[in-house]
Length: 474
Image (cartoon, rainbow, N blue to C red; front, side, top):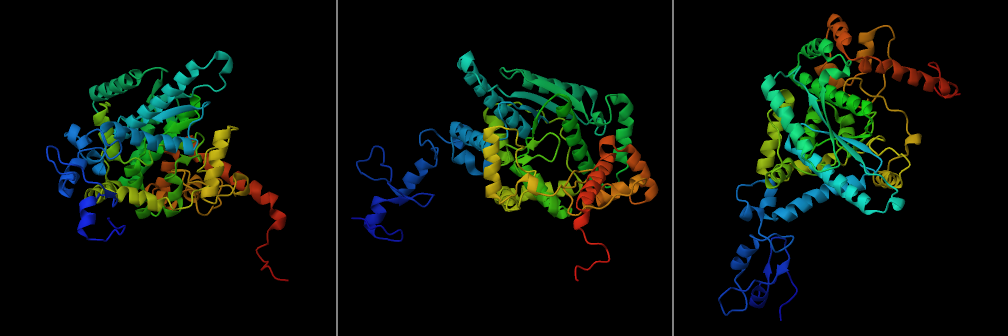
């Protein structure tokens, strides 16, 4: 009889059981064509390595698709079907547990043509298609909930990053073909120029946008400014076309890079706001359903399912962002779990009050919001003070500074975070005034509105405040 000790080295234990990679005891697989009842451990392990650890039936991706590699060892552990099911399960769990999409939503998928946004679009489409099938299968008298609507938007940055017109037209046509090839329900495709944040007269505003970006001397500052302008363009397009949520394809790898970038740039206070599943500080809330999916897994899914991507318009990263990206890739090569470790560590930061789904009367959304408040010990929104945000990057500010009316450049300095002040804003006053004249109106009007709200709040609690001469003693 074999004993129950995991450290026993007796012959009976070794003959009856072998220990698998997960540390559990397994019965050895019998040899084929041999009369013995048990196979040697080495033979048993060799066979197990070629079989999916989930379904125990199909061969692993490394066996059936030798050309597909990477994904942190998933190619050697899962078959293609189980791998896809596992990745979609991460996406679906993020959506349902955080109430990212409700039946009444109109969601806009930010599409860049890369693998992350391509998988996000595919998974959202599959959820919509399933909801549509359930809707069609329900009797007309019993249909209560509608099917959420999906749109796709691509941000055109050729004004700042010029590309040959033929390459741009070909890339946009490929994106339109990708969207139109998806099965019904139909999805509208938008090409949104970055200069649209100024007005609808794109031709007149292209020169202004170019001058704004050229006014930033820091390489990293230019990239960060374009990132903020890209989000502003998405927000405007979503708002004007009636969308209620923006879905980003931001994955684990991108978030890991952002965590280190924000740490280097001194954005530690606002870091927690950028890495949550939901970001409702914007007029149109932004959600990250691929937060738990590494880029290698997304790339492998695109290869397995032949999901077409458009990489020709991808801009290389430079400055601090480029260095961090290269550093994270090196870490990932040494240890495939480094990206997930970085994100999990940063995830221990306490989220802000706006990192929850806005309550719109939907029961599912309300329950998800309550669960998240309990998990992170968050207070309800009505019990929290009003946040103040950087007027350029919209990051929450640790301390609100009073603005000086009549001096635009002073208002800009007072209403920005230290990172934007150091990397984006000009250093001298003359250049600052020129820079302020190039900013979109949505940015320059923010300080005045925020200041008015703060002054109103101060007037309401004036009787409870101590004067400058009071020390709080009798």
